[in-house]
Structures are given as C-alpha cells and as structure tokens.
Length: 131
Image 1 (cartoon, rainbow, N blue to C red):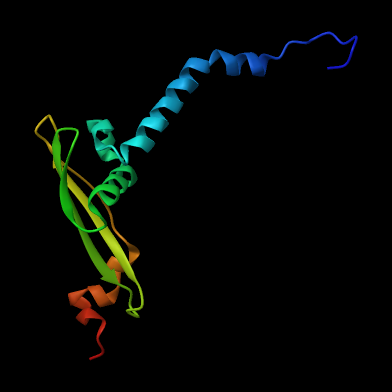
Image 2 (cartoon, rainbow, N blue to C red; image 1 turned 120 degrees about the vertical axis):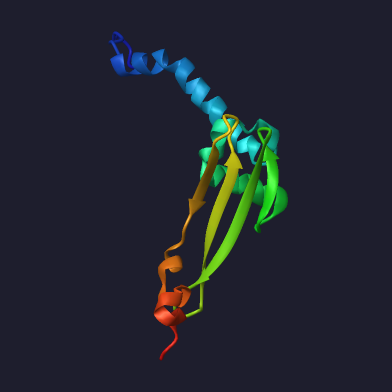
C-alpha cells in the first residue's frame, strides 16, 4: 500500500470472507473423503453413489479385483469384468457396485467401457471373427 492512500471498499473480498464457514465445511468434507479411502469407517451411506470414491476405497483396501466390503454398515459387492478391444491389444474394465440401501432398496453404480460394445465382445456379430 502506498503512503497517503486511503483504503477503498472491496466487496468481492468481503463476500469471500462472508462465505468463510461454507468454505471451511467444503474443505472439511474434502479432507474426510480423502481420508476415507484408507479409513472406510469415514464413509457415509450417501457416499456410496460416488463411484470413483468407492472404487478408490476398494482398491486401497482389497485390491483391484472383484470382492465385497462392509461400508457404512452396508455390504457392498464389486464386480469387475474385462472387455478386449477389437484388436485384442487393450482391455477396458466394467466396474459395478451393488448394495441394498438402509431403506431396503437395491442400488447399483457402474462404469461401462467403450470396448463393451465392440464386435469382439458381441456374440450376435460372431465375436468379431471372420466368417
């Protein structure tokens, strides 16, 4: 600040400061989720719909394959299926999580790779083989 200058209003800075509590809550939530990867007891039931988070929890605690874990008091099953590319040089992975919510409703979350639609993975198109 230069000498002789008078401070002026800074409405953007004041608005930022007014949101301080909200921003601190967001940071605390972000930290909880980061720590939950190694400590699944921090996971809440609402977190089960966050596919990347739950996948990270499974990978950190039981590895990359299929399996089951109890998370937030709910048994969650993970299923991993590989799909080859048409050339067979690479593999895309379908990852699906299944669980029954505390309300008794079955739920799932999944990612499907683009390779799943390849002719090599389709029996109706002769598994990609030449006729």
